[in-house]
Amino acid sequence: MATEHHGTTETTEAPKHESGGLPQLQFEHWGGQIVWLLIIFAVLYAVLSKALLPRVSGAIDERGAKIAGDIADARRMKDEAEAQARAAAAEVAEARAKAQKTAADAKAKASAEAAERQAKEEAVLAEKLAAAEASIQTARDQAMSQVRVVAEETAGAIVEKLTGKAASAAELKSALA
Image 1: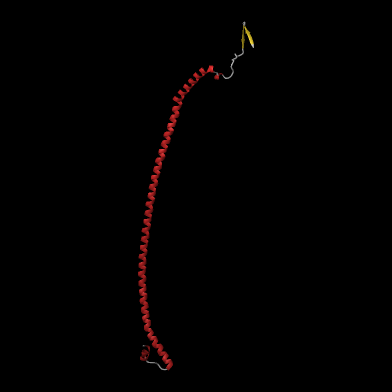
Image 2: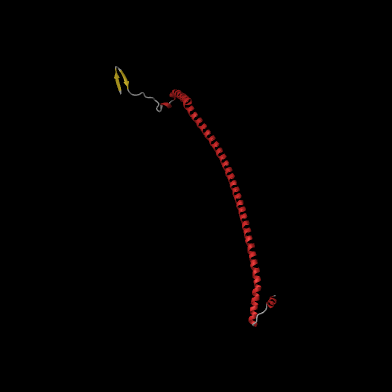
């Protein structure tokens, strides 16, 4: 496409280069690309080192300090919990010892009271037994004295029945002796 303007000829076609391919890979453009690469790197380095990295570093330091504080708090709480657990275990042991002592004292007291009651009951029973034995002895003695009388009467009745005549008291006494 060629157009003519006042005696000159212009073409609208782009100038053709002899080598094809990407221009950024062509050696003649590398100088400018390296300069722009260094400028962009310097700007990014300055922005990152002055603005972004201090914030990130501060956040990392804050987080590290918070974690260290939390760990210290956790250790402190763990130590407190262990101390409270030891105190509670000591209180439980003390309460258990008191309970055992109270139970032993109550058992001893109950045993002593039971022994005292038993002794009183045994004394009362011994008195009743002595009274009963005395009563039995009296009844036996009385019965034994009556046995002689009954024996004399029975012997007299037997002799009278067999012989037909009554025996004298002297004869009955001599026969029973």
